[in-house]
Image (cartoon, rainbow, N blue to C red; front, side, top):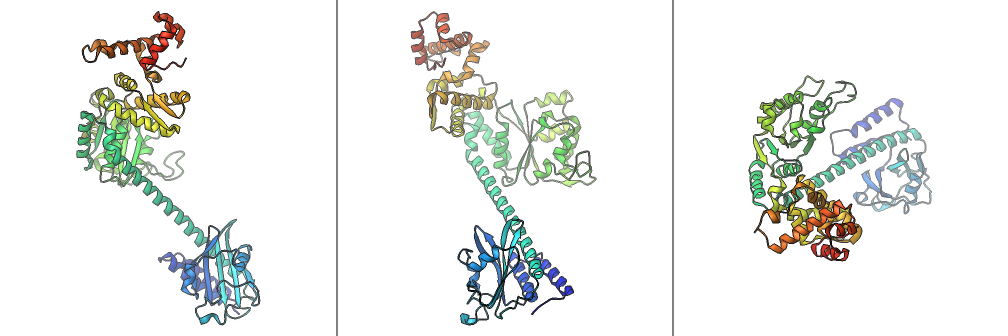
Length: 519
C-alpha cells in the first residue's frame, strides 16, 4: 500500500509537470510522465490514451507489450474503459470484477498471461465537458489501489489532461499552418500557370511579360504605372509569384485608404500604450511581409508626413514601431502602384522626389485596354468563365457580334470595367435564358451609354474602307436603334415610331442585328 507523504507527493507532482515540459519528443515526455505515475501509485503497467473520433488511441504505455501502441480501443467493446469514461472520479475495479480488462495477457512481466491483471483503476480526462482521454493503471496484486486517495489519481489525471489539451491545440495549429501553406502554394502555382495568359496575347502585353521576367528575379523596387483598372495588382502578384520570394507572404496595403491618424501604425506597427487605444503590441505591414513582398497600392495618395518614414524603411530596411525606441530590420521587397503622373506630383511638391526615385528603380507601365484591343477577346472569355462559376451556370458564351461590340467600346474603366460589364450581362441574360447563356450585344449595358455619348458616331463611318460595307451598315443601324431605344425610355413601340418603321419590322431587324428585345 502506497500513501505518499505530502512533501514527497509535491515533489512527484513537480517532477511530473517538468517531465511534460522537458526538451524531449512528445512520446518521451509522456513515457517519463508514466514512470513518475507508476512510482507514486505502485502500478505494474499504465497507459495514457487519447480520445479521438469516439475511439481511445494509446499515446504512451509503460509495462505493456509493444503491440498495445498499434491498437485502438472502442469503449463499446471494452466495458471497463466505458465505465471510466462515464465517471468524473477515479474508478477502481475489484479483482473479481466480471468485466474483462483490456490489457489482460499484455503485461510485459507476465509472459503467457498466466497471472493477468488483478488490480485495475482508471481516470477520465475531462476539460469541462470535453473528453480528452483516459489514464489507466494495472497491477498483479489484488486491492493495490484501494487505499490510495482519489486526489492522488486526480492530480495526475489533471496534469495529463492539460498535456493532451496542449498537444491537441498545438496539433490543430500545425495542421492549420500546413493547410495554409498548401493553399498558398496552390495559389502561387495557379498564378504561375495563368500569369502569361492573364497578361494577354497582344504584342504590347507580351513585351510587358518579358520585362516582368527580367525584374522578377531581382529584389529591385518596382513602380507600376497606369490608369485605374488596368490590372496593376495582377501584375504585382505575377512579379511576386515569379520571384525567389514566392513562398513568402505578399502583403497588400491600400495607401489611399490609410487614415492619417493610423497610417504610421498600419505600416510600422506600435507598442502597447503608444497612444489611446493601443492595448497591445501590434506588428505593422512591413513586419508581416518579412521575407516576402509588400505591395503599396495607390502609393501616390500617401501623406507627406508618412512619406519621410517610408523612405527610411525602403532605403535602409529599418522600421520603428510607434512608441518604441528600437529599430527593427526587415527584409522586404517593395512593389508600388499608382495611377498618378508621379513626375508631375513630385514637381508640384505633393510627393517626395527621393522616395519616388527609391520606388521607381524599375518602373513598369501597364497600358490601358483601349491600346490592346487584341486582348479583349481573351479577357472577356476568362471573365465569362468566372461568371459561370460564380453564378452556378452550366455554360456561357458570346455571339460574334458581342465580341465585336466589346472591341469597339473605349473602356474608360479598363479591365476592371470589362469584368463588371461581363458579370452584369451574364446575370441579366441568365434570368431570361436560364442555365445556358449566350451573350448578345443587347445584353451589354455599356452599348446604350456609348450610343448616347458624343463618341457614338460609328467608327465604320470614320474608318472608311477598314471593314465591309454591309458590316458598317449593320453597325450603324445597331447603334442608332440602341440610341433611339434609350431615348424612348426603353419602349420598343415608341422606338419603332421614332425610327419610322413598323414594330414587326423592327423586331426582325433587331433579331438579325443580335439585339435582344427585353422590354
